[in-house]
Image (cartoon, rainbow, N blue to C red; front, side, top):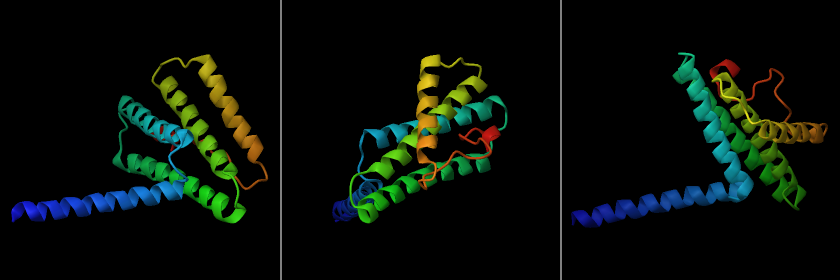
Length: 162
């Protein structure tokens, strides 16, 4: 009898996780290479931000929670861009791709800033490519209603950047 109830709980848990995963896949426009790269960059930026905070002896759960909220908001904006592409514009994924590329480059630049903060030199070629992508996304989005670079220069999850 006990095995039966565990099986039911396990099946319901699997259904719940599948439903959430299916909805996220729909909302974010599928798990393509750009979105995978963005999620990886977001996680690595958060980790490097925590490393900087530990190095500065300024680790704070409030600042860490704010960083997580920012990452969730990035994913929400990717989802909104996908919904606009799919249901308002009706063709392609231009807005979603632009939003993902903007935040992908933003997270990459932030990781390089965190590396520099920890005293690690950044490869110039990588730095140039990320800055070029970042600048292209900012300049290409002017007047198009896409996200703009934060005015305060905030690009990452490092406590000093928040």
